[in-house]
Image 1 (cartoon, one colour):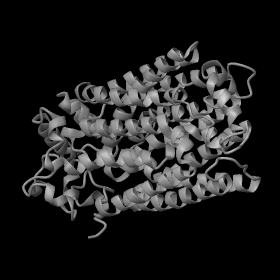
Image 2: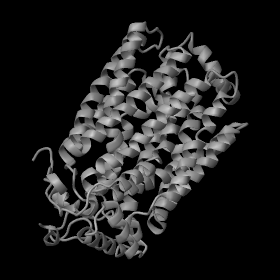
Image 3: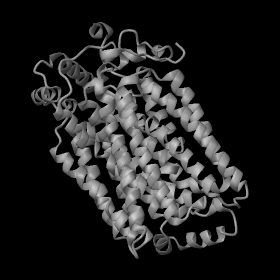
Length: 515
C-alpha cells in the first residue's frame, strides 16, 4: 500500500477494553493540558515584547538605530541582531537540555513531579524577566523559562496519552495544543494592551508569564498519577483503582494486565536510550525525531514568536503589527478545534496531508506577494490591499498548521512509543523540537535579511518534503491502544522489516494480542 495507512475502527484491531469516557478523566486531562499555557504564552509574548520601542531602547539600542537606517535601506534587515535573537531563542536551548533531565525524573518519580518542576522553574524565570535591569538578567530568566518548558513539554503529552481512553486519546491529547494556542492568543492580547502603557509595558507582559506557571504548579498537586506511572513504581493496587476510576468500570482486568505486561517488559530494559536504537524501535525513533524537526521547519514559529516583528518589517504600523498578531492568534486557537473534532474521526494522516498541502500553497503565495512588492533590494511599500492579502494567506497558513502539524506534532510521538522507551522517545521529541525552535529563533531574522522573500519558498519546499514523508511512511494510529502500537508497524509495507516476527513493540507477542 503506497500510503502505508492502517485504518481500523474500535481499537485498531487490538483488544477492546471495558469502560468509557468519564467526566473525571476529561477534567483531569483538561487541567493537565494547561501545561501547554507555559509554552504558548512564551511563544506569543516574546515577539511582541521585542517589537516594543521602550524594551529595545533599554536593552538593545543598536536595533533602534538599525530600524532608522532601514527606512532608507533594505526592509529585510530591520531586526537582524544576534543578541536580540538570543533573547528569544535561549529559552529553547535550555528546554533542550532540560528535556533529557525530565525524561529520567518522569520515569523514576512520575509525570506529576516533572510537571511541578516545570511550573516552578517557569515561575522563577518569569520573575527574573519582569524585574530585569540588564541583558544578563533577561537571558537568565529566559533560561529558567526554558527549563520549565522542557519539563512541561516532556511530561504533559505523556500524561495525557496515558490517562485518555484510546478512542478519544487524540482529542484529549490535543488539549495540550489547545492550551498552547490559548497561551499564544492571550500573550498577543496582553502585548497589544501593554503597548499602550506609558512605561514598563514590557515588564507587565513578561511578568504575567507567572500566571500559567502558578496554574501548572497547582495542577501538579491536585492531579492524580497515571496508572502506568504507578505501576512503574510498584503501586499495583493503587494503579488498578485509578484505572477503574478513569475508565468508569469495575472490570478493567484486560487493560490492567496489558499495562502490567508493558511495565514488566519496561523494567527489563535497563538502558532505554540504548534500547531505542534497536531495530524493533526504529519506527518510534524515526518519527520521534522527524516529526518535531518537520514541525519546526514549516516556519510556523516565524509567525508565532516573530509575528509583530515580521509585520513591522513588512511595513505594518506598530498597532497594526500587534493587532495582526492577535488575528493570527485567534485563527490559530479556533482552528485547533477542527483537529479536536476530526483527529479521532478521520485519523491523523488525513489532517497531516491536508494541512501540508494548505501550508505549501500559502507559503508560496506569501513569498510571491512579498517578492513582488519588495524584490531583492527590500525597498518598497505595501498597499493596503496587498497587506490584507498577505495577512489573509498567513491566517490560512496558520489554520492549516493548527489542525495538522501543530497538535499532531505532539500527539503522534507521545502515542507510538511503548512504555519501556516512552520517556526516552518523548525526550527525543522535545529536544529535537526545542533544538530546531532554537535555530529558527536565533537565525530567522538573519535568514530573512539574506534570503529575503526566498525564505518563504524555502519553508514551502520543506513542507512539500514532509508531506511526502507522511504519505509514504506514517501509518494510521487512530484508535489503537498504546500498548498494541507494534501491531500497526508490523502491518506497514516499509516498517514491518524492522519488527521481529515473534514480537511487537511493547513486549507483547502476536498470539497474545490477536482477538
